[in-house]
Length: 337
Image (cartoon, rainbow, N blue to C red; front, side, top):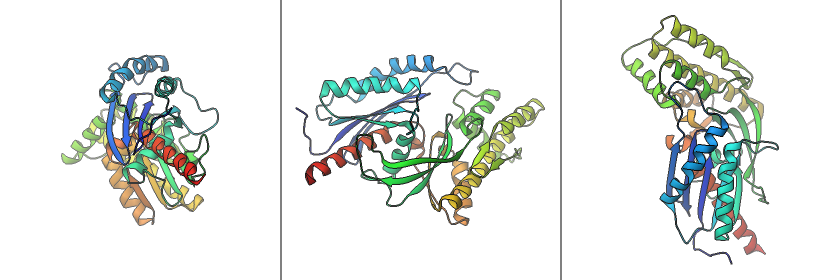
């Protein structure tokens, strides 16, 4: 017999390539948000999947011990794949899925499967007070991270069903080579920063601005809604080897990503007819990017929304928010029946 509660209490789990995350949501309240970054050796530019899986197996019991036990959990939600598309697969997400399935069985509560990308979108919606349902209008979402650079349309679809996520995601464009986060991390490692390098590279670039160091421009390669970053990476590597100022190159990396994102968003808005944008993913936490896009897109009549920086990076909050929505949808259908 499944337990009943006045407000659904959902445990969310997300095991991405570089972060182990768990979260608890009760009603519209975030009860817990716990994360551990996976350890990457200094000088390395990432982890193999097997290495990441091992660390998730080690991290999950520790994080769960910080938020459990609770007797009122009504559902478990987990990101089981990278994207909401057939064939989308990555071993790291199976680590979280296995734990979620075991807990749901032990507690006799529903299990809700979603994707990592949908979890990012739901985190943005939750931060905007839209944890009960998606935005009232279709919108664009831009997912910028170490593993994804995509512009997608998000069409509302509250029909539910076994795999309903509240919306339908369609990829409109993205990177044709490396991702925005990879550009940041690869240049960051070249600069001697630890991986992932986003916050440190942002700090270096900001210090450069404060000290009056001129940015080192990098070419922007955008065609329609698609972008190439590998040429920018090669150019930045060569500039550093030639003695360019590290803070100037860091600024150039930020500018390249911001200008590329603006061009892609404008092209996507024109192609789709959508004028509301939600930025998600770890790169979206960058303050220079936020300021540049807010100003640039406002002039183009495009409304852009950002989650708080903490909910832009990988997290299980959006996954739990999705589970809450599924719980409410099921309750509504039972009420109508």
